[in-house]
Image 1: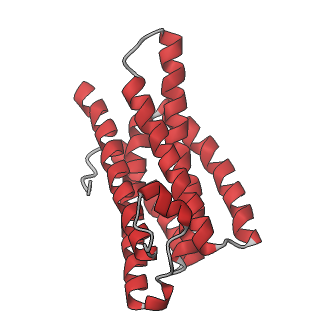
Image 2: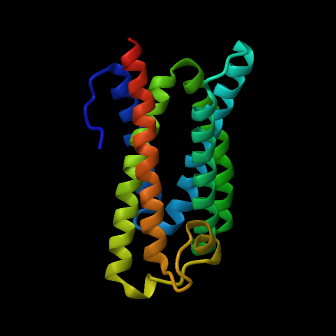
Length: 200
């Protein structure tokens, strides 16, 4: 995990992350399935926003070379969307939580768009930290499922198809697959933030 906080940008990114973690812990406590529904809604925003902005940058500059990054970021957005679709099947969110999804997405899309346009390094670093927190949450979710076997329900078909899981896969298999995705997203976003340091 990326723990050094060498710059003001890093400290801002980490501070925002910890603040949002506090809100999630306060609102959801150990209701990890419901937490995943709301947080994956937010998590699906950054890849789409950043991929879209870099796509437009490529068009404005009439310059090639941005394709791999665009595809990676849009792929990240799609992957997070599939996390959301999976946990909607598992958690069956309440009407309040569905409204919270809409509200959280509205707020976070605008916040992240402004942050990415004016401070892309901070934006990528923040997502790197977000994903580290997601890894912690999914590890705690896995521990909860292992401690309570009745929670280890059958994996929904959407998850079996997306991650190519065995037909008899269970919830713990889904959590492990999602956690691995989050690890990859964390590494990618930290690497993109580090690119700005290399250019400095």
